[in-house]
Length: 412
Image 1 (cartoon, rainbow, N blue to C red):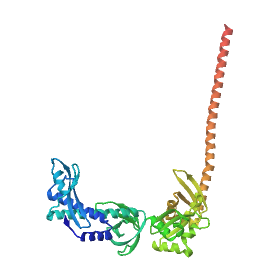
Image 2 (cartoon, rainbow, N blue to C red):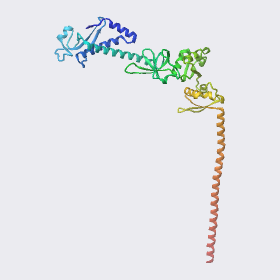
Image 3 (tube, one colour):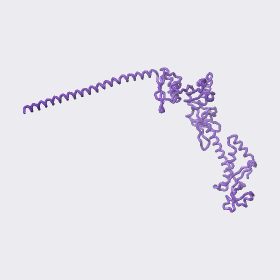
Image 4 (cartoon, rainbow, N blue to C red):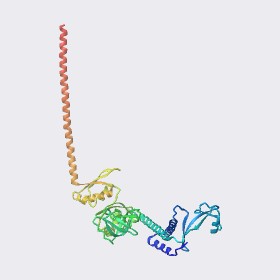
């Protein structure tokens, strides 16, 4: 046995505190390292009856080989005679197993290096698994980190035991990410790699707004108010559809808070991003009207409502058309994402013009049809007259032929 003292256990406890690696994992790693070093020292690979045992009370560790007690030894690596086994344990019998210490007096530099490599690798594996499990639990949730640096347009954020990557597509356009600043991010994905797990975070995800509301609005956390849908264009505008399960609680008012205190806190966190809170409704017409806000709506016509498509025509006053559509179509685009309805917006004058064109087209079509019917009828009439005239000619010829025949008969 090799005396290692209490320093090892102190180091195990320190690793457990700092890196969260369990003491048992480190001890098991040390035992495996001793076995690997022993096999390399003796240049054996296939032996399966070798193990290492650490005695925590004495602080000693050794390598042991398990052998089966037999009457006649055929394989000295796996078998031991009863006589030799009695020297180790007097109560042993044939077919029993005994552990024989085979710890070399000096492992040597190569063996020590092998043990170090095994322990280091096992500690890294344990640390990687701990981080992976931790952030797999955090996937889909909000966390706080510190900006480390910017590399190739990617922002590196330290979120505890590892550095996360924020790709450019998950950043807010125009946002300046200064190293050292604290930032609230959404854990988007966790990828397992050969080294530490790669954590992908987002600062532009819509779930960030949702979790901020859950933190600031107690009614949402208690389940009284529900967030039914959310649509966001990070850095510009967010639309939030909410619903209250309690008739006495106003869902929109609860999210805004007394004198707008709750919504102002969230807006400040999002760097003054505009937030529209709308009331969710089962009635698609009412829901679409709310989603188009702040623009006023004259009417909503449902064009299609089935599994394949949901389309609606929204009519707004002329002075509200640009507000309803929004800059570069942002307002109607967010309303579409929020309601999952395809929304076509027209002004009152556009609808009147379209209706007038439809009426004109409708009035012109029958005239054309009547004219075509008259032409068709006249052509038919001409054909009938021609047939009648031809029939008259044929009758006259037939009568003349009969008269001629009668005359011939009379003469005869």
